[in-house]
Image (cartoon, rainbow, N blue to C red; front, side, top):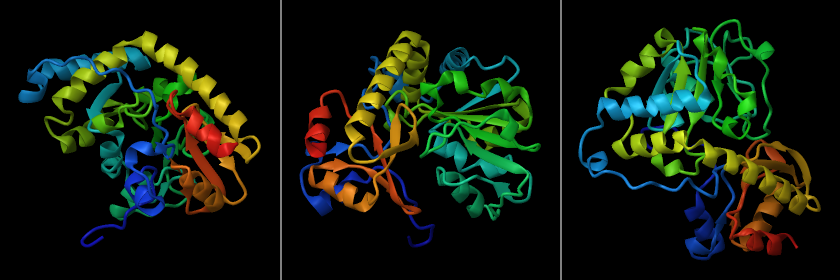
Length: 313
């Protein structure tokens, strides 16, 4: 792109799929992301959430709800931002100088952020970034695999397996936990994410984000959703059942490599061929530039399983 970095590979891009394979957008089933297809119901919002600058009370309410939901230690700080990606782009601000270890394959925005800042990605780096569960294979990392220096743990998909969270380590100045709101709650367009860590460690991020890093509507919706533990528990049960259902559908077409209850990764032999077959049925999937075998699928909406079942029959 002129004046910037080339576009990086991500899920989504449904407009391009429609242009290539045809069909109106509303006829497509987008399984290319790991976003919950059943979003949290958006509550009614007060007018001031839209019309005034976000106030401190709303920010405090969101932070308090996040602390309770994720059982964040009292001495750890919580910084909300307009999406986990806004935090990822600024992570070089808190990392000591030198190369960074980011085990691959994984979510590519982490390496991009450090490369743009002039850092090298090197397995000998003293700063380590771990996506937990990993995207796309769902690998879970143990504390034994943390760096002796700064370790950033991206838990964007960890809300389907909260027992695996490393949030209790966030009191350590060398640990930072990232959380994404959009995936588990199915509201990716809201743009809301969190960094959790020692107050001194997060200070450069807080200073860089400025006084209003989260919109008024995101503050209100985020606080409501994080306080609704019954919805979260029910959602985990439903997502787990749907992940098992998807595995059963794909059993004749590939081998399960891994994933989470929000997305599944399959070895389908020829991923481009499978992606093309699904696209001809107006179903969009995810392939990766580093594998000619791997196909990743998110979960269909409860009303859309029939479309996938027909395509895989």
